[in-house]
Image (cartoon, rainbow, N blue to C red; front, side, top):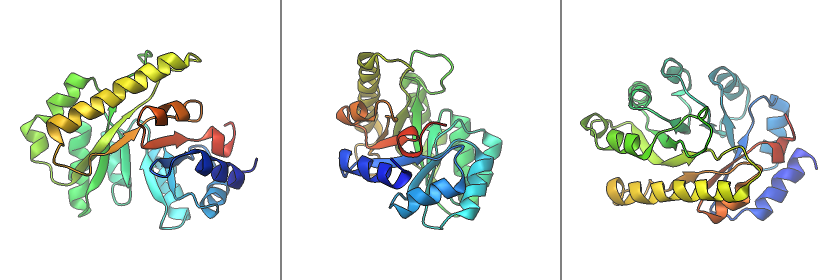
Length: 220
């Protein structure tokens, strides 16, 4: 299938309430435009330099999501236009996002990234660390970040029962944080989990955002 056909196939297989984040990292602008012209408007990048360049070359109504590990000194480059940052894994990073959002007179949507996989190499918070952030006075004084939900990456494994268990764990974290910190906040509603190899399981376990690259653009 070509890119447009892949987009349409995914749209048929994914419920309407689930957002498709097309992972366009390493892909040229021409490939992203093919997806855009097929109706895909949300794209995810994991490198700030690539994201800034692509943002300058693509239509203004593209909704850009940052999905990789984000260094605090790079936040300022994407703050003017980024719609979602999926990878908040420290209070320092959230503080920097808030500071740059103030400068740009906007509110930045953020997802707390949790470490749910078996690999130590993946980034992410523990539940205890997330609660320390959300319960801090520092966080309550932030006004230009919106915690819109959570994100997690499953283990790199062919054992889908392991993956399902990790997604269940993340859903549990989402429900707990919702009840303790965001029960009055409608905007806390996003659960970003699932990629090309496991997005159907992720949707079964409550995902509202799936990050899909290979199934749209082919192998890297």
